[in-house]
Length: 299
Image (tube, rainbow, N blue to C red; front, top):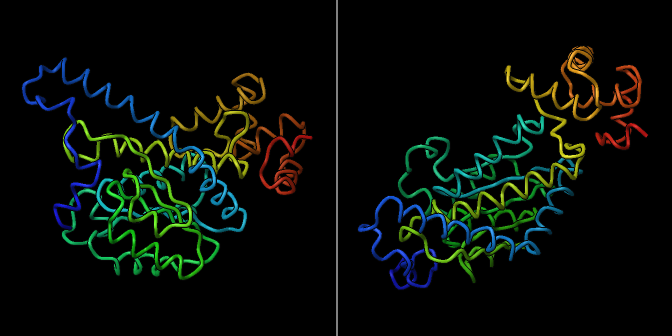
């Protein structure tokens, strides 16, 4: 990429507020960095109308047993992989339902893979490896908004008929031309020039949080504001599961623990058993009929 092209990117410009960064005290740098970070939430807020249709598309995909697939390079790719991985314990979904692809493969999570992000063919190959279908939603993530790996993946997804979305941290981003649902969030120049793991990365993480969390709400993974499909895979999550049952139903700890065991450590099932005062079998049937929504299951 030519330097003249980089000059056009907000994420590559110098921040006039931090020209003397190397001369600041720790306290001064902290204040400056915190002020810059505060700009991110507002920048994301300005794009809520663009984020909404992406979430609605993902909910639609999930209802058709489609997948949410993130793809990116470097920090952008790592954030996608992180969000996808967290969906498994938080919402009790399979690892195949939300997938994160990073240019260069799993090893690129910790060590940069030279040239991987500049290869558009690699983006297509990674999606081919997932056996992409028209039911899936592919979200390309690129702070610069021009990563060839992401563009290659989006082009392939479009050709196949899958829904495509993009997240860029520059306006008039190149990847926006390759996605049916583009999101462009402008956080201004970075605190440290060109370090897009900072404000750009924070903005991307906020948006990914919105997409995955609200989409999961849309398919019944949440009751009130409780993560009722949490997987109790360790001692902390077992105790959290019991607390969720207590919060959702008003029962005491011993009762929550007892029903939790009877429900074979299925939090959602335990809640329906208590609130509807039904057996495990009937609670299971109710949840199946309500497509996993507790409110519908207890009516």
